[in-house]
Amino acid sequence: MAEPTTVTIDGTEYALDSLSDTARKLIDALRTADMEIARTQAQVSMFQVARSSYANALKAELDGTA
Image 1: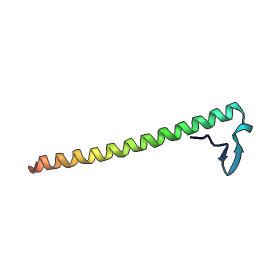
Image 2: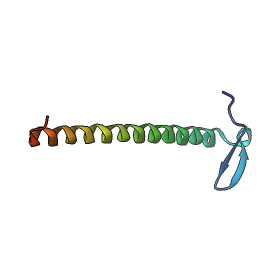
Image 3: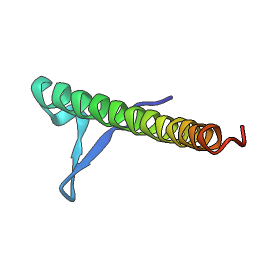
């Protein structure tokens, strides 16, 4: 996958090759953080489904319908 040659920050487009090494490292850190946030949100969704299933199973067990 090709790296983008520009990045848009707060509505302003910047050429990556014109940015300092520090700025490029910070952009990489932001991208990594965004990917981890997305991964964590997906995990939370999975855990919410699992929790709901456990709650339904418990309700059925307590109601004697299990």
